[in-house]
Length: 229
Image (cartoon, rainbow, N blue to C red; front, side):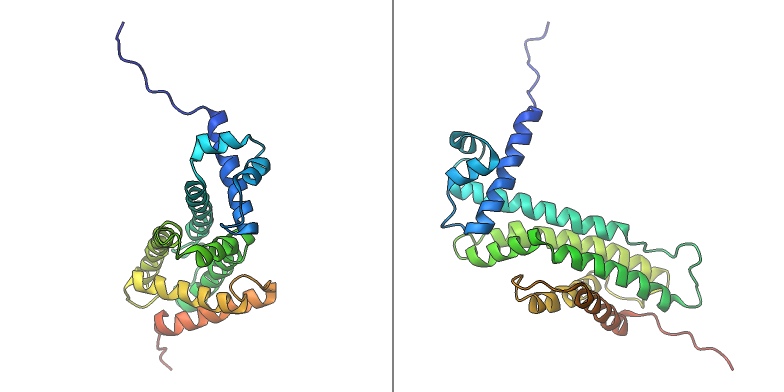
């Protein structure tokens, strides 16, 4: 019998408890802010003893960083799932002679779905906490924004590159096009929502999506085929 031992993997209960603590911590920090939040309340919301929070995540600063990272990962997973559903290729019934109409409708659905994720309470709470605590936790900019934004831009760039190759967009730098598309969504929405302090009506969200796609296609839309008379 070998003397080497198999490394133990974390138990399901320990993982679930850690996730409960992270979720509770984010809720408390979002409601109280970092300075006013306390470990006792986090433990109470998570349904665990205070020492359990310390055992899993250490001190308050590490709890905050870990909660922000977990929330950012969750938000980004939701955004990536939306982009992955975006059909970059023409589906059944797609018209090769009218690619602009086809891509406009598809992009508008994508834009609307991304805006719904952008406008949910978790996303706004994450950004509000980032803005409020960035001077004390400058590393959060990369944890919350940089890493996730890069992944989202790369995923969207891949879809836009396929659209360009199929002739539904003009030839372009897909990474730059993706950056512009996302900016056309997030910029107006942050202004209209007053950085997440104002609920944006559904009609207004759809209007932002429509305007963003219209502007995007003015820059990146495939040229309209010239028909002979």
